[in-house]
Length: 94
Image (tube, rainbow, N blue to C red):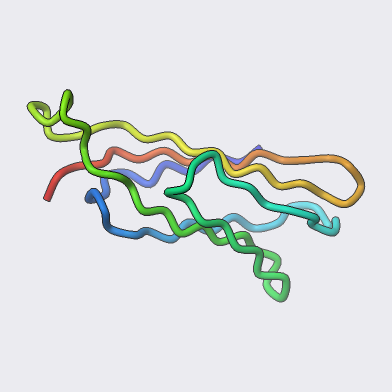
C-alpha cells in the first residue's frame, strides 16, 4: 500500500497524483473510491496517474473554509492480488 499527502489544494481544481508500480505484475483493473478520482495506468512508464478533482467545501464546513479529503485507488492484478494507493489533501475554497 502507498500513501501520498497532497498538502493543501483548491476545490474544483484538478490535481494529478502519480504512483509508481512496485511489482512487476500485469494490472487487470484500477478503481477509485469515488467519481472525483480518475485513475489511468501508464503501461510504458509503469505508473498509475490519478486525476483528482475535489468537490466544493460542504455547506456545513464552509465556516471553517476547508475539509480533509481521503481517497483510495485499488489496483487489481491478473494473478488475483491487489494493492491500495491512498492520498489525502486539505481542500480549501479559493
